[in-house]
Length: 155
Image 1 (cartoon, rainbow, N blue to C red):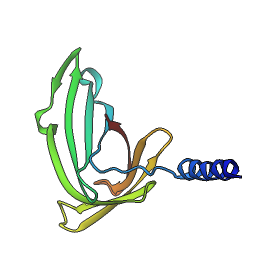
Image 2: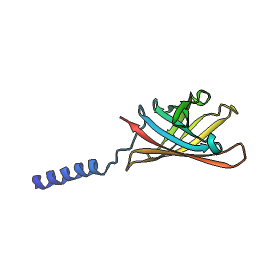
Image 3: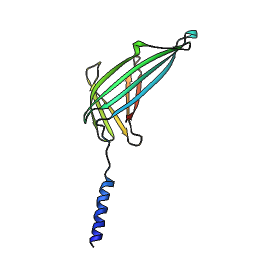
Image 4: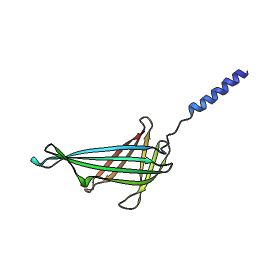
């Protein structure tokens, strides 16, 4: 009887550990995403290719604070030569707060142009350990422009 009770007790303890899901925490993690676009410009013999690179670094500092840094760079290729475009190079860092339930979250920061709070939702994909954000902005012509970022964790 004691042996049966011990085995049942051991089975219950094992089930408790197996059935508990370990929820992902973002505290202290760093994530990176990149967008590279190319655009052909010009006419006839003055054709050039503009390549723009946006590098994003998302840092979850503690259980509620985060920061996002965007570094932009651009080059123009014309006649086999590639030159940087200094006016399109720069870095912007924004502080934010965040919430995260193990699957979905929100980043809340201050829009630098309007000074108003802005919230961006994100989702965590456990299968491939990525964070995905999607935001739609309106360009200068009034057309919607959707930006999708997929962040990979930096180990």
